[in-house]
Image (cartoon, rainbow, N blue to C red; front, top):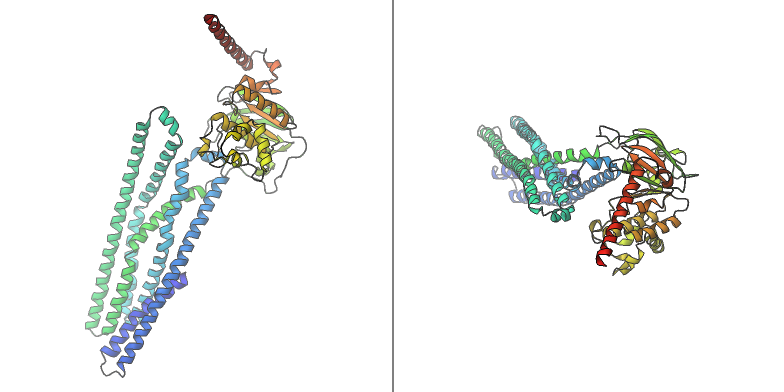
Length: 574
């Protein structure tokens, strides 16, 4: 591409020289032999140079476009790969709107700079040096003036442009905030409508949109100033060069052909140089985009992984916590404090505790969504940091509270963790999760496409699809993070029975406040303020003063109230 641009620029430089030869050797020399033949040959040379310029321009543009799109492709890949590698902490600080703006809009902002901007920059540079060289050979004084004049213009322009660099960056940031508000509003549209807050949302969007409007207006004002300023500087430069060339022509130090050649060379570079103002703007927009992209590309990934990490569990799958404490990076106190316990292979354990007691934080440490601040977690007697992350997360299946389903078929959603699973395996997982019968009633069965985030399914149906998805990967440790809260008691009972049959030699950890879930477990760990305060079976804990006894008493009170309410209703009816 660069070679073709240089070739085209040299061809453009030689055309004015041919015009000079015609003027000096024919028009100013009427006694020249065979002037018609000389003019014809010069014309053919100029036509050939024009064709070369035309062809190189076409091919250079094609190559430039491929180069431009190729770089954008690679940057998008790098950004997406980095975002996939980032831990959950990154997403707790960054909004989806800002991430989307960086992934797409900032990459697109580089398109203008990498496209025509790069081509114009190379072309103007070659034309400038070629014209300077020709002028130096013909008139050293003109050549020096021409050579020094352009850098002065570009330097002045770059200083003005850099002074306004933050305006371009702020515009990109504000655009990300607009994206952020829109993405959040659309994702939570059901909540907005439930509370009738549409007008408030419109007002909130109007506020941030207004901020973006003012920031973008400042950027446009800079752009509107730079381009005319560039044209003014170039025109002044043209006037200076042609004025001095005219004086030189009057003093007979250059020929009339030289003067015409200088004028054509100056006009040629002026036509392209008028875009330098736009190019300066593209540089600032590209610089702002690059800064925001680098904020992602250079962001730290704090979960280290050993190159020679273990690929699979060996021996008994015992889960061990040894004096584990954890504090979130921005936290002021530990969310978990000195946690120690052992869960033997095949045991079913429930985690019980008030909201904020550390239950979800604890299970998030098992697949290494976060690493402990102190202590260590072991599986099969091996520190989980010694396993490959993929291997660890393959063997630790988690059904989260927020059951996210993708906009794809139910079969693809269930097989998300195991894309090579057969239909029979998918169906078996669905049967275990008590969702098969419902799927069979759908028009397209397992090929039914669910809406974004699974909005076409009820909460309980989404939970059961998520459970089937976790079961299909056949993990050694299966964790349910309050993932049966939307399932009716009868379906839950069937689910627990089928899970019990499918859970041979599989460790199951359940977070739930539902008493019905606790009767299926072998052991209960009670958490309070990040500490394990009770550990035992239901029979062992129900008569000991503490959180679990208070919990069972509260449940029994509710049951008595319900029974009394039903009895009163029956008596009144009688």
